[in-house]
Amino acid sequence: MIRVVVPWHLRTLARVGSEVELEVEGPATVGAVLDALEAGYPMLQGTIRDHVTRKRRPFVRFFACGLDLSHDQPETPLPDAVATGSEPLLIVGAMAGG
Amino acid sequence: MSGVRVLVGTRKGAFVLSADGKRKDWRVSGPHFGGWEIYHVKGSPADPNRLYASQSSGWFGQIIQRSDDGGTTWEQVGNKFAYASVPGTHQWYDGTPHPWEFARVWHLEPSLTDPDTVYAGVEDAALFRSTDGGTTWAELPGLREHGTGASWQPGAGGLCLHTILLDPVDPDRIFVAISAAGAFRTDDGGKSWKPINKGLRSEQIPDADAEVGHCVHRIAMHPSRPNVLFMQKHWDVMRSDDAGDSWREVSGNLPSDFGFPIDVHAHEPDTVYVVPIKSDSEHFVPDAKLRVYRSRTGGNEWEALTNGLPQGDCYVNVLRDAMAVDALDSCGIYFGTTGGQVYASSDSGESWAPIVRDLPAVLSVEVQTLS
Image (cartoon, rainbow over the protein chains, first blue to last red):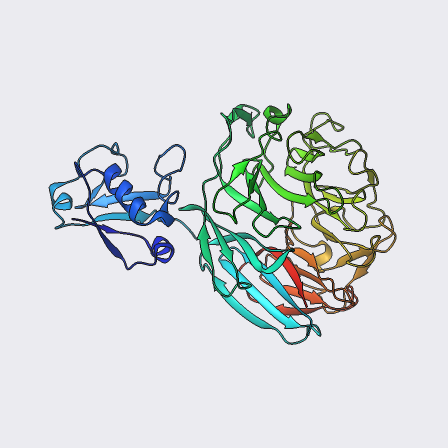
């Protein structure tokens, strides 16, 4: 089981609390977690990564265990603490505004 | 009992403003989708309870919402806007080729006859259609591929398809407008398109009379006379009497012919409304006065409508999709400002009053006339 913290606007779309729990088949990677998240919550398709290019949206970030994983390849293994569920993967809307 | 429902899209959510036919006492519902940019909300002419909303975010992309109860509850529908073919390039601001990339839906235009059919005008400019209530979307690629697309260049707001007019007499005829490419028309239901920009003159482009490249801000039509079109261009108010085959300027005595919205009275096809803006360098009203200008002669002769509108220290803009008219016997006119006010007139513009004053910046205003 992998824990994922989703940002406010995506919680309202998915009608979930701040954190969701996902079962991920195979190696725990960002790509696999997003596949599982979008399968469980289809309304989030296109909001974190582009429908066509499958690339992360520029103002979305992935953090875990104090690390910025945003620029890792989708198939890069997640830290063990995330893979085992002791730490969440944070999906974050980048700070911007004024 | 007749009534109206005003659908307002803002920088931070959607609002639904409702009143009976007197249009004096208003109920305000919202924000719906708080914090999201709502570029446009529009109801189906065939089923007034069916609404579509374009919800978008610089962070999380495009969402489409649908309501089947007049905006009380909403259901998220499809948001996959994939170009039908390898989209190629258009021009970037610096004149270099730039890949076509979907950014957002600017305008949703429901079919005149089928609540489940709706058109979407998007940035980067293309026209999409859904025939299943917004669940799936398919591009009508003939517009993007008709031949001039590679030369289209974005306006300051992006390469957006912002205007879609469905001909009420000929179901195969559709007009669209793109900033900064111009106006286009199909006569075969969207398979093929042609530019309709003859007579437009834009000093801001190298060839002022070019076939494409004009920054059309908005086009309006009266449903009883679909061959007559009125256009607010970047500069110039224009009129066509031949479905866009040719245009002539009707700016006349306007204090500025720069502006964004244009609309036509519900019962008087030659009564037209615009909101002059000082210039493309200063996007606020001239002389710090918010004035709607009305022509009752199909252009050229314009009168200022000011009763109830601020006539001093006013520096708002009115964006291209932020004006609408109702169809009650005494025609109502509505517009929203970047300062968050939505003004209404229930007497064709003779007098105005704000429905609300302090919304987020208004991006779009539509109105439904309910019976």
